[in-house]
Amino acid sequence: MSPARTPPEARTAGGRAAGGRAAEAQAARTVRTVLGEVDPAELGICDAHDHLFLRSPVLPGQELADPDAAAGRLREFRALGGRAVVQWTPYGMGRRPAELAALSRAERVHVVAATGLHQAAHYDRATLRSAGEDPAELFITELTEGIAGTGVRAGLIKVAGAFHGIDAHARRTMGAAARAHHRTGAPIAVHLELGTGALDVLDLLCGELEVPPERVILGHLGRSPDQVIQRMAAESGAYLAFDGPSRAHHATDWRLPEQLAVLAVAGFGDRLLLGGDTTVPETPGMAYLLRRLRPRLEVTLGERMVERFLVANPARALSFRAP
Image 1 (cartoon, helix red, strand yellow):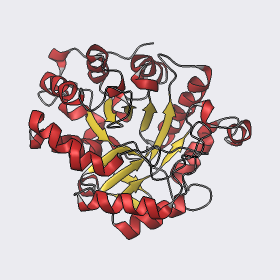
Image 2 (tube, helix red, strand yellow):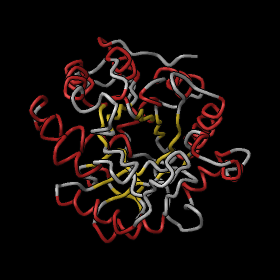
Image 3 (cartoon, rainbow, N blue to C red):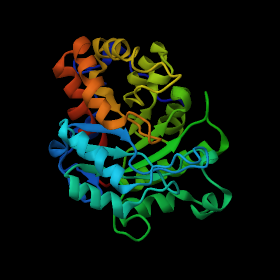
């Protein structure tokens, strides 16, 4: 079953599908941070996809595991006006929830942590088995009770697609993510491998598994600069995250102003998010997002539109109310 693609003529002037966003207007929605619930209006300028801590066998020797370095990145981000960071690091990849909470408190930056599972390549067999026969139970526990007994709760479910599609591991983890969403209301963030597979992900999550599109964030859209696919994904009502600026061998920064402008002019300005996606110590990351990328985008799109990408959109995308 495929999710309905909303035709442009059925959309409101703000770019959202008419009749398809009633849930977004509900009262008492909050953003779940590592220090507790936050009013979406208080979130501020948000890096919607980044990592303070991360480890993976795919990136040997390039771990993000230094709390002092993480504090420095948050401090620089705050000095540039940043107020919130969403860490997409999922289960079994070195999240360090207690340190996230301490850093958030010390550096006065809201931090949203993730539950979920990445691609199978990022785990050894023992770690994958430890997620349980049905990972949905793990996800729900981390969203409602806390991560690894710390009491620090996740506010996001992170999963991942395969290159140009969905493999068996992705289908299993997305099924678990959908069940956890239906139990908790939490949004689902999806790593798209090299920016591909967006429509397959939407067909599974929003069609077969009945997750509302506005509860889905698609990551890495800028890595596959197919403007037709980007528009079709935006028409579904999902959020599109353009993240990972200045990545070598990816068509990111230099294509980004045009890609965002095309989507904004088409009425999808309220579906777009920006992120730094720090994955190794050398990644320009969250400070670069505000120091260099923001002014470049403002030249093309204007300050008000870029502020929407950084403030209003993530506040709406990340906030939820438990069923």
